[in-house]
Length: 261
Ligand SMILES: NC(=O)c1ccc[n+]([C@@H]2O[C@H](COP(=O)([O-])OP(=O)(O)OC[C@H]3O[C@@H](n4cnc5c(N)ncnc54)[C@H](OP(=O)(O)O)[C@@H]3O)[C@@H](O)[C@H]2O)c1
Image 1 (cartoon, rainbow, N blue to C red):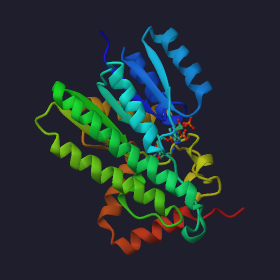
Image 2: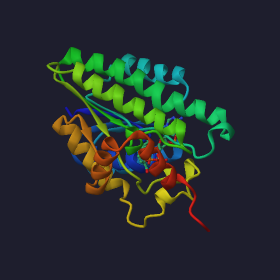
Image 3: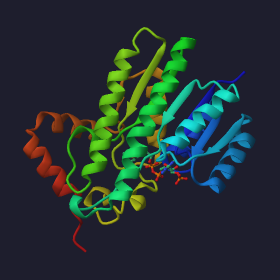
């Protein structure tokens, strides 16, 4: 029997590419997101292309009740998850006092609350079986505060800190938790976060979602604690951790500002 992976935010971007990679490795899938049409098309394609089982579950994970319902549903169906990928997430660009609270509240609920809940319940199940892998998607944003995307950066710092601590607690259980921290990646993220004019995404050489997903998949399979795809990104993480916070803030602010038209 194949092992089973649950991927949140599987309808596009990094999550969709991760779904292809798991499927290519003969791992069955539970795909989770809000866009039903995209999930139907993806599940059908993966089943045909890789001869695996792929099911989808619709859930708005910014509503914790829907996350809880999804977990209870899987238990009722006796579905055991071997790999959990907490990938669903989005950002929001703008001057904090003026950005939309409703959108940011949903972001906190999705990026933090749902991810924390799934990490808790699935890690407990995995420990009882003595094996399992969790991949939590943070960001390079996790390593310093981010003016003009302040809530998003703070949510990703939370993801990194929670996941590293969880990975430490899991030692000796057979279960690991890997944090993937991508830099700018070519996905639907830019539109969802209103980032089209940000200097951060103006580089023409930003990697595609497949490259980033494969890096994360390999790191998770090796049980690595933290994975930053891209040599330049790793250099930036090291320099931002060594630079005084006031300098790091100035640099991020400059990168986040809108490019001149
Ligand atoms: N792209 C980047 O530059 C970048 C850099 C660092 C980190 N990341 C992180 O990578 C992860 C994946 O993002 P991406 O770049 O692949 O962006 P994306 O293409 O916009 O994908 C986001 C995924 O999350 C799902 N999602 C959004 N809101 C949801 C909700 N309320 N409930 C359930 N699913 C929801 C979306 O599906 P539906 O719309 O169908 O619900 C979609 O499948 C995110 O956590 C993001 O923060 C991205």
